[in-house]
Length: 219
Image (cartoon, rainbow, N blue to C red):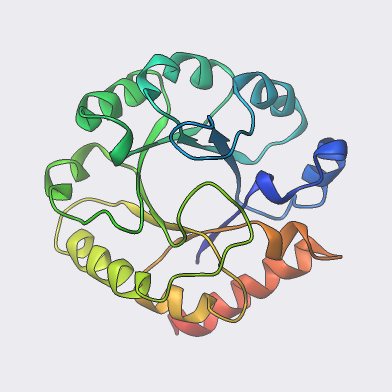
């Protein structure tokens, strides 16, 4: 069974508490933190995550699209993040930061932009809980899925399956009911979806539809 992680970036920020209440059937809440430097958009920081934490029992999946993520790991862990994902492109020392995330009591994720290859992941898999493949270029919601990423998902699936490690494959960007089947068949296990979920009149129905599609692909 897949895990569904609606992206808060697509929610109505004027009524976040109510928006979170609409996705109680999800598995995670995906929190896109952008600094206006690593990516061109600017979103929120640990203060908002801390404010939301008492209002949700979902796993908080914090995705740091920021430069120098090592400077803020403690703050995001203290705010209530369950998973902290950094970008391979944002640091020269991804292994060190992954270890720090684990030391802070969080699960560790590593994100790769569409143009970043899979070389070197073998040495990081023992310490990773999740690899997040960007299926759009990061920085903005509502973009279209990049079809070439299906091959990347499949190649990552083979790398993980050939190892002794249990690592989730998350995908983020342009996922909807039209392409979800292909994404799952390629090997994804965590589906980040923003506009398709929060933009629906009934987000829980969309989440359930995702699971139905996943069940069909796993048979």
